[in-house]
Image (cartoon, rainbow, N blue to C red; front, side, top):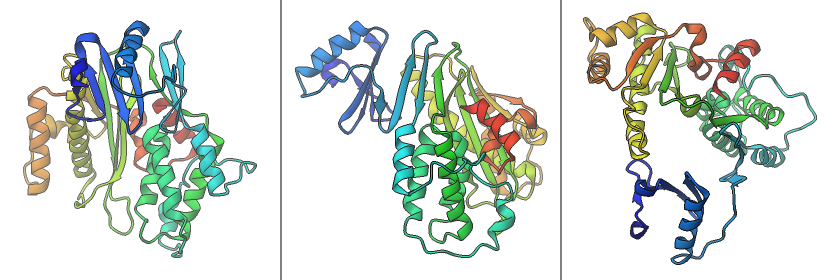
Length: 342
């Protein structure tokens, strides 16, 4: 591909770019996508590729890697969903499509019930959760928190975990047309929402953290994970940890945008959080009386902030969209946040 002027991305080896001709080629095993500003450029590249490789031209994509692709040219929007995959998953695990779908993927009082749940031996649990992971990381950030809790019980699931896995699948069946939309109003802002739920794990008292990153109005990265190795001693410490994790993700993403020819991405990167003491400490680099592991995180945040790699701003707790990645939510709150991130 180098003979055609393509260079491999430093961040993702499956992405090849020819910046001189505004071409991008995405490869995964024997599937590929071509992106360009004009159809003529795509046709010329296909002709060149046919001289070097055996390939089959499929036209404008409607399916790719288990995702349904719908392009609304008048709106400049690309919609991704996984209806076919969810139906396949439902059939594989005999999930009923006639029972009313739950309104949320996980019950609100999950943590209150987890300690009294009985251990189970179910060979299908890992396979089911594996299928849910694929959906969560591809097109459904709204199930990320539930799936993250399920993965923590891979080695020792309980009846509650098994029930939650099937509940999550039933929720997906009822909302199978949902997904994410890319494109829309033009904006070069890279905006990240960061949040944590302090000491929410009853057995370890570790915190749950999450973030979601938008390029313009398009969700491009999200995560829901329990903080590993560290037990935060306060809400502020939990927020420090999560802010540091979110900044690491932003720093990892910056070179991708540079490779795509999007300049000044650092100046348009905004990190939003709602814990005022944590935000102030990061800006002022104040860590008096903190333990070394926490001091390192605050120093890291302060140094990157002073280098103007991102802007740090306050967002109210109610409008922090990352809240959906940190705790079980009631239907009203869950639906409000779901509509904001998908």
